[in-house]
Length: 252
Image (cartoon, rainbow, N blue to C red):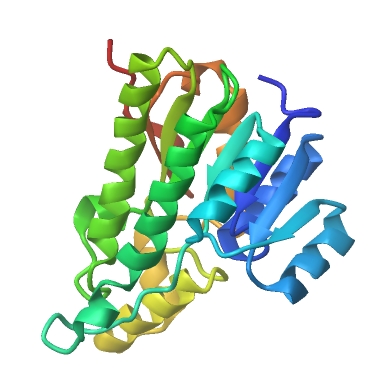
């Protein structure tokens, strides 16, 4: 599928992985709208890349439904999320432990409901950002790994609803299989784990293989959208060495 002139909405697209994806989408000729809270960062990405921007809280249910209803994107990318509080299980408060559930999962819930209930047009695609922590866990980031697994499940649940309602909307989960420096969340997590081992963040991240910077992440997501072999998959793993791998294919 060509992305030229496709209407794409990216939440959390003003920094980190989201910004890398926005750069890649713009290069493919997509018409991108970035949704994030910080006005200054939004203004910067708009000035540099010429994208439209909306300042909104991703956990605001009304905002999710209004933006989806007003823009009716061909492609919706749910990338935004919070940086988890790092610490051992015995050191975290419940508030710190559950922060990703109150932001990432809550936002995913509202935006997925908006996509299904507005609804988006037939043949639209929704990409849900997950994490390698959803596969292996992340013992120093509280409930983060569980929240990212829940988003993975929610993408699958949304596909079931789409089929039941004959909406012809495809929901797919994107799973970066490595920590990525230069993203905020990746820097904090890599710093915490590296510190516990007495090594540098760069040394820790190297254990995952070849690095994948935010723009490389964006290029891999673009390949998921454009390459016909990925059109019907449900869960995709992304890393620096293997590129894109299908972790879970379509079910009959």
